Amino acid sequence: MRTNEQCQSCGMPINSEELAGTAANGSLIQPLEFVEKEAFTLAGKAVRTTNAAEMTGQGLIPGLWASFLQEDKEHKPSGPVYACYTDYENGVYGKYTFLLGHIAPPGDKIPDGLSPVTLPAARYAVFRTEYGPLHQVVAEAWQRIWQWPASVQGLERTFSGDFELYNEFAEDAGSGQADIYIAVR
Image (tube, rainbow, N blue to C red; front, side, top):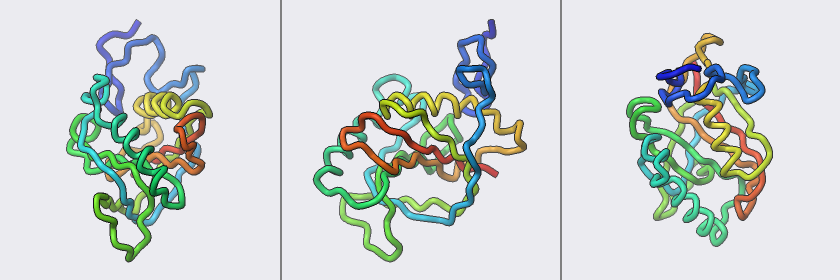
């Protein structure tokens, strides 16, 4: 049994006999694809948090989701929902901004009460969650991504901005599937 080991990507303790970077079936985690994206701006509700705070069960992200889902039903813009992680202070160890929102069309004024975030042009490793309860499958996908051995492929995370893309977002956040984009170089 491995003890006192940490994930190479996020520093979280690995408390199992599975190898870091492996899926439940023992295979190495691999991105679905790599894509280049131009810079784009999102507008939505944001909080500043840390992975450590979110792991305590007292994090800010669940409350932001609850608020967003209620408000989004009332003022639903068309298009997919984005959950964005940006403005990282120290990679996975420090504070970051988490924003829930939608694409802000170029030139449009950001509505009052919403925050804008512009993600720079980047190359992304794209991971797809399993189909199931979104709160569960997205959390499981992040656990696997944190163990992803990017360096094996000669890559490193840039922490310039990562995001979850919900193309067919369930109104009750029930079952679904999401793509997770991790900025790499």
